[in-house]
Image 1 (cartoon, rainbow, N blue to C red):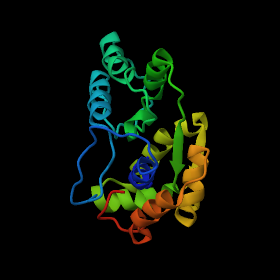
Image 2 (image 1 turned 120 degrees about the vertical axis):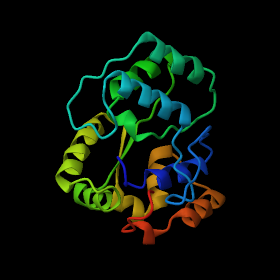
Image 3 (image 1 turned 180 degrees about the horizontal axis):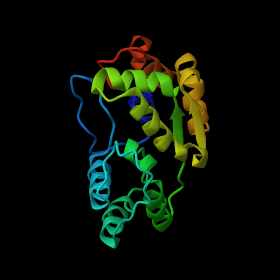
Length: 199
């Protein structure tokens, strides 16, 4: 979900040897990077457009896709041998499509969901996007439906309080000293209530 520190979590995981590639470049509101894969982003936008939808569509839609949508990503992802990271919020509402993709490529998939209080998300998004809090509340509920289907459920406050423990929980292993340093070096808790930055 947006405004849940998914970018920070992705950065930390990337410093622990999970590969990322072709990611959305940093911008003024997220100078350390979004870590959203551009190929995934473009494909998700195509599928949403195919369904006359968008990322902030509040309707409960059973999304459809074509064989071409499926083939496009299967042909890319099947060549990746190393552990890799994909972060793109729209995957939450397009969950069924992505499960079909990974079923075809037989990758060892670990689905991670980081959960932040809806009120904090809504207040932050309202300050930045000028959409009503009620609309964002409905959007939060739509995006979070996928949470119960994930393998690793991360509490936002737990991540902030102990990022090392959170990363180790996701990776199923201890971090070495170099990895711990990189994780702590990136986390800036002053951004928690900052409405100017999208982390």
